[in-house]
Image (cartoon, rainbow, N blue to C red; front, side):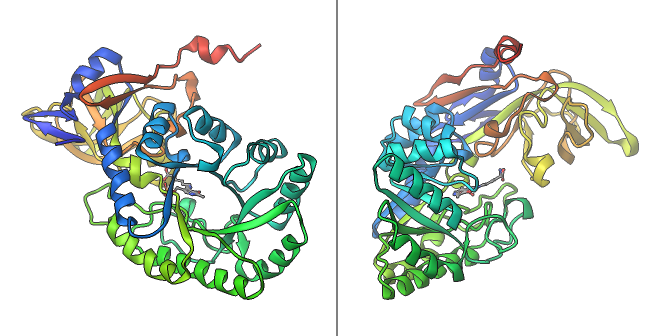
Length: 413
Ligand code: LLP
């Protein structure tokens, strides 16, 4: 058995007791299962096996170098969302042709970086950006491949903060503007449109919006072909959700069955940009109880040594993450608000959770935090970024050491 499961009362990762890891490396601590990442990567790859496809793992979900390297080793390509992520991809060993570059506000420096490198495709967000890409390509005397990020005006029915496909969202180019834009690009010798791209949101828990977005790309590619622009690939983005609370969500196979029929008909190869789907269930955050105090109605506040600085998803999106004692005790169960140590009431990891009566120093795990956990951590309250450990073949390695105050202050005058 791989991943996170219980051996008796104790939660383990790929057979390694989480309690031992916390003792060895301290808390708060991110722990990842390499076997889970591999299994989830392969599930997507296999679901699309009978059709030409490339998985470009969305680095934004988790770009710790060792995780990026692990995915490269599995056969993945990369989706980078900033100059920093492009550089991380390079240092993780991805070649330029394995990188697509997305981002709603690419700076001149980032465009230079991507153009000079010769990435597989720059996913362009606007007519203005295409002009800037053309100018950079001319200056560097090279030719650039771009995909047009389409805004298909489709409701992903996810949290509003992570829905990106409506025309009221800042992302992409309106469908109706694309044909004319392609005519303009045809007159630009330094730029070639090779793909169409869409990403309508994240944590999408039904396949219908994803199917509709893919169908819109296929339809548009057909229309463009009729007007003389030959598209090579369709990039359907990421977005497939995971179950944080045990409710059923579509799996990789259902996702593929939703996307492929439309895409197959186009004959175009497909790029996928999954992030969360691969890494979310592959990570936990270990945190210790710092204090326990009574509140009204017989409930307790359980104050942990991790909060919004280590994991901001509950505060930012009202996201639910299971929170469990690492070693289950026989203490009677009690309702608790599990909160962080920061100076804000929003700093709540989980409200109204029923757990065995917690004790100071007890170790807890916040589950399914492999995606958008450590990457969104901050130094608020001068807190230090947590360490990260990867379990691979039953062995634990520190893949990011704990930040020190010296690291933080090194930037300051
Ligand atoms: N491609 C593009 C262009 C994206 O913007 C994203 C995510 C992905 C791929 C990967 O999406 P995924 O497969 O992971 O859903 N911080 C938020 C999620 C923001 C997602 C942003 N874009 C959270 O914690 O839920």
